[in-house]
Image 1 (cartoon, rainbow, N blue to C red):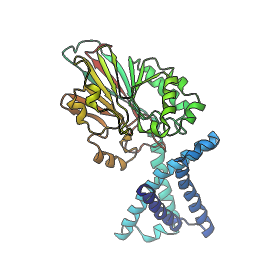
Image 2 (cartoon, rainbow, N blue to C red):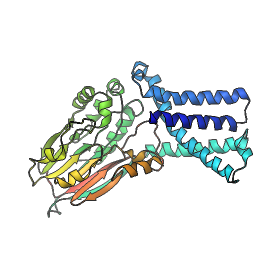
Image 3 (spheres, helix red, strand yellow):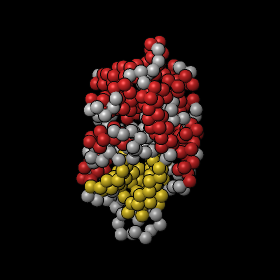
Image 4 (cartoon, rainbow, N blue to C red):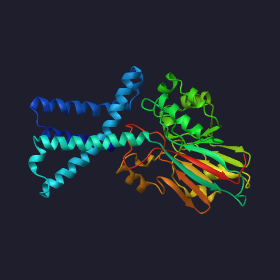
Length: 361
């Protein structure tokens, strides 16, 4: 209820300001307001199952407009709040906010600059390199592990985008690829119709992944079937041993009956380098307490856009980047993909290249 009521209240506030601001006739004002309301209404359609009943092109348009409108609404809300406060403090002339050409040009200009930057920044994938070491054998030839999370493949991140990501990963010549959940966005339909599993088959290293919460939204049986066709080794509360490496794939916390980190690591040979894949970075102390060397998580997206990033930073012990607890190293990725509107403002889309020293597999 709160998720729905807050955006609706913000929508009313923004649309009232837009109506007051635009130097148009009454009919012109109403036309703009109605079109904006319809765009926002598409958000609720994009979150439902009826999207799968639409033609692919229409479904893509509805999803793109609907989810993008939520972020546009957020920034319009913040901008109008700032202008209202400026007006109350006599810093902004009241005339600038009512039937104002220059006020309209200013608001449109700010929004265009913000979202052109956000779109370009999203498409610029950041390569983050980290070094992981174990034991005293620091001179061994390092192994390269490419790590990703939150691909959110679906109506907005489609096969051409995935193809670009696959080429980026292959260029690293990895020995292993790890994915920390949310490969699928909300529906398996776009992945099946575009045969996206064929792109995963082009990856030139073994791919190991855990489930995320969005795999449950898409329907877990469908997700598991896609993983199998894609050649992805899914670890669902399982341990995979590869030489000196033990990879623990924990089920997503959406499954309230998933195994604990303690249960999953109980029988792992203490000589192994233990990597934990756990989509949502809650209770990081569990990895430290149970001898995990490295944990990879995602889920947070680092808020996707500022100031939502401040909220995620207040919720999680680590909402983004590298973190340490005792002898355990963590990395929480902001994701290579994104949910909804493809904008990164104050955050980034990334993949991680880890150089693992002292371990063979």
